[in-house]
Amino acid sequence: MTLLEPFRALNVRQRRAFVACFLGWSLDAFDFFLLTYCLEAVGSTFHLSLKVVAESLFWTLAMRPLGALLFGWMAERVGRRPTLMLNIACFSIFELASAFAPSWPVFLLSRALFGVAMGGEWGVGAALAMETLPAKSRGFFSGLLQEGYVVGNLLAAAVFGAFGLFVAHFHPHGFVASWRMLFVIGALPSLLVVYVRSAVEESPAWEAGRARRGLGARRLRRPMRQVVREGAGLVWRYGGSFLFLIVLMFSFNSLSHGTQDLYPTFLRRDGLAAPTVSAVAMVGMLGALLGGLVCGTMSERLGRRRTILAAVLLAIPMIPLWAWSHTAVMLAVGGFLMQFMVQGAWGVIPVHLNELAPPAVRAIFPGLAYQLGNLLASRNGVFQAGLAARFYGGRLGPVMAWTVLLVAVLVALVTWLGPEARGADLSQV
Image (cartoon, rainbow, N blue to C red):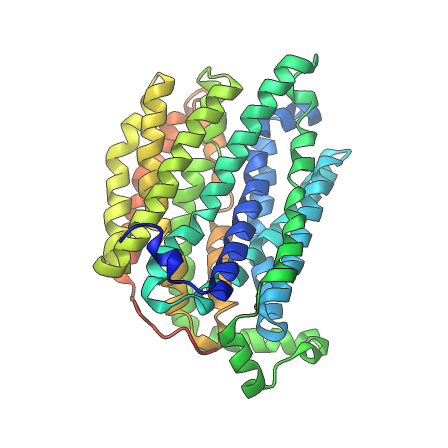
């Protein structure tokens, strides 16, 4: 099977829905990762250390569960499509607000609000995509959809590198005085709303369930206490499965953010110039993209759990090349191999979580579990920066190496102990 065959099998409705969800997640990730390339520049602007500036990553990640709950609740009642449009508009607006923040507290607030919007996109987009796509190719499209996150990182690296070259040539005060323009560029995803509005149709599963269950916009007018009671009831009813998914997502997010968020800073501190950092990061993201596609497709044959186990355990032998190399070429090779394994495992997650989720709460359940796991892992960057400063003289390499070793084992253990529902019916809500 070639990579184009699954696309040829899609009808127009399915293709447009997937493109919208993929772009939404990619551009959301693009806006998030722009900050990871600007941490030291933001710190210089507001006269703060890396550890303090890393709090902005924490608050972005910590607020994502709230977004998953709010936007997921809305998607269950008014539909996946309108919720996705509102979500894209929100994270674009808060990205723009970050660009014009006059002080550190305002910047931190902007990133927290961005985190709310970012938290809603994955669950809503994954539900719309998985409910629209054919069952036989879910594994492939799960891998590709999750790699929208990688494409966002790749795009952020490319923009950072190009912008760094521009600033070095034209701007006398350097990148520290110019990082705000990157966040202005990050507001451009708002244009995607026009495409979703004009070309994308609602999830067929949600449309079928709407008439049967009497859902509609009028349900948004219910008192918030009723909404809270309903949410609590769902958590109680599916508590065991929900708790497992939170733990699984904690381990996955610890692995992902532990290998990505401070890696550009690690490369800069290793003496690489901004264009070289961009190039090394882009090679790593190409490995991640390929890993997600390969492992997502393999999961249709090997199963979801076995594919995840193979990918995360193979990440461990990649640590020396990834964290301890001393040339840009070898760092790029290590980054490619590490991200192939890490994001290969992640490529299985959209379909795995949607297959495990109860049909009635598919827009809330996976996304909220994902973001609550993210919340538990949200101080990863702060923790890594603190350990590096305390024990390794500021060097990030040893800390990131230990992170991969410990967290990869945790991911493998939790996945091995958990269930699998490959091929579950996603046509009903």
